[in-house]
Image (cartoon, rainbow, N blue to C red; front, side, top):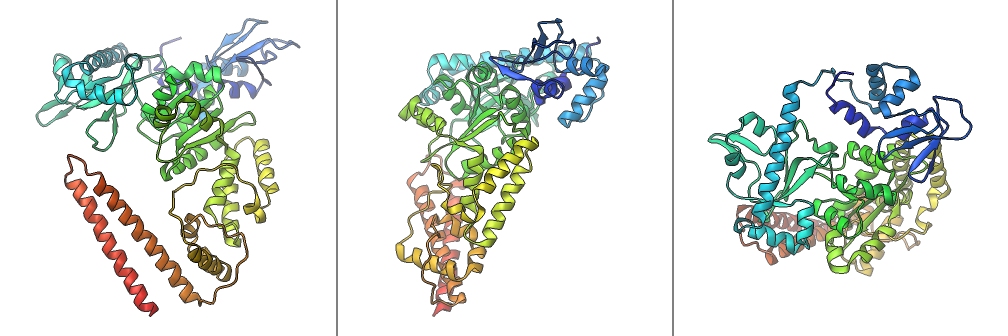
Length: 541
């Protein structure tokens, strides 16, 4: 067979599960590391046809048939190579490219690319232990990395000068810029990564194809990554996956965290199956790659608002990949901490408890609906029901979808608030509300359901239980509306003042215009909020 550009076939193998494709024709049962069934290529009563998802091949111990996902479709459906690729592309929802034989120039360019990135990694590694990288080495060691970890993950330091562009000044500029390490400016080539702690990014074959650089001076963004190249696509790349593949197979799950340092620390502390998305939010491609290795995934995010949003996004993405043998869970670390901090301060046992107490997906969605809709009102219940219906409709396994819908129906929409929730990390830490204010708000909600609907998002954020019946308020609807608005403004003012206090208590050494502009913006918002509050109080008089 001619040599074709294999990037598309590699993408098919990444996005599609071999077990899923074969099980459309052959019932499979998992035993040990493999799935087993009766061979479709010869008659047999005792299963001798093995499918290894992790390694991407099937083998029949009866007739000797052996191959991968493409050869299975070709043989089982009597198709030519290109026809089989077309069928698999349709399954994966990908557009067929024009197949071209890979030229000698392309092969040479790819080999040259890897040689440059490998040499650059060596340069960065050496510099980390020299005077220029002293502050970078101090930073990474303060984050709990020892020399063995630094060596294993090949962490290095990119200096402030243009060391890469000067080292490779005898190489064709196009070949050098193709790696993303160097760019061309008005005054010639310059290094893209400067004064950065460098994390190499490996492909599935263990080759370095890109880099992630972390800032060391507190500047944003914290991480910058190699832009997409011919050999690197960050929306399809999972950091640490090359190290985690064996552990994912052995532990029968993957753990997904938010950052590179978190992923490395988790791996070296006994959670070898941990990975992280790279320079982007989770994507469908990330989920497809993980599910191809194992459909059991535990997402571990920070317990703050951003972490909760990331969990909801992950849940939305993973729903189409769910099967009846999937075990998807959500774990949260609270108190402004991340997995790295938990491991350093409290150890692996504490992290294990967080992972072991992760919330199953079906309960995560249910608790999210409880927390984000006023389910004691008809409108809130209707919104929550629509939300759950929209979620379950994304599950492509119809039998499994029906079972989840039945489970939700059994929890009685009109009694949601009486369902005993599992341990849950709040989305936002909200200061306590005094009891008098709580009682007034409860009576307003009981008396004027329309106001409850109008201010649903704000009322939900107060974390007040509206279960019990209270005496109806004597306030008119206009006065009740003004009460909620004024209370909302007071809360907003307090949050602004807290934010300002936090900024003033942590003034960075290199505070510049960005810091001063932020303070100015907060002061302006405080003035505006006070004006609105004073106007409202005047109206009340």
